[in-house]
Length: 314
Image (cartoon, rainbow, N blue to C red; front, side, top):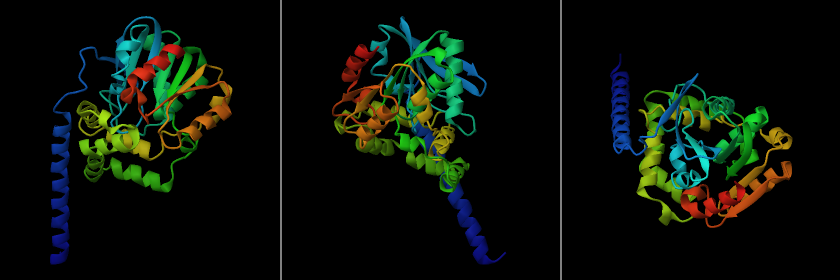
């Protein structure tokens, strides 16, 4: 072994050890506050792992499906769930790979989530259910109605993902990106750098909220914790998301299903009007409701306005 080779090996080892230490520190800091703990937590034993959920209220059943971005969990509905539970039997789930649900090292796809939700409705809720879904999970709600329409009643979508984005399939580049994130030390380090508290603060200020003054420390802590519970296994869903494995073409489903579909959207979200117009072009019976001065998460930013619209819809 030459001196140069030995130096390279030593530096590589040092870098790996440093990244590992940073990974452990980030995990400890991210989960110390235990924001997601809830005495009402229940778990549905599904074939690929336990799915955490809470159940509140009585009335017609309503299932809440959070977004699929890093740090997403049922915490997303914290500002509207209690009010919804006054008239509905509300179920809020952490989808497999998110929040406090199990996070197996698998490739997460839209089809996997569709099957898990249909099974959850049949085995836990046990009756026809309304669905409120946000962002990327909107495609899951649509495909659930298409695959097993008997278990779904009305569908409400908050800022659904654009049809163009959903049509993008995994490419060589995105497959390599997934492979990178899945690697034990380097991938975990990259993932941790993308899911720090400050990284989430920037995302909320630039993409998720219109009014940055509405970004609370509690929201940032919840997203940070959800992205690291337990350990850093949440990176597997992030890897599949970035690899485009969660995308699915819903055009045929939108044309075929005859369920009542409602869309709530933030007026300040970039290109949102184009997205809404595209959905309406494939299913003209869809009704759309704007929430002014909001972007991706109006139910977190202007919860009262969203509740007012849901009162009309549901």
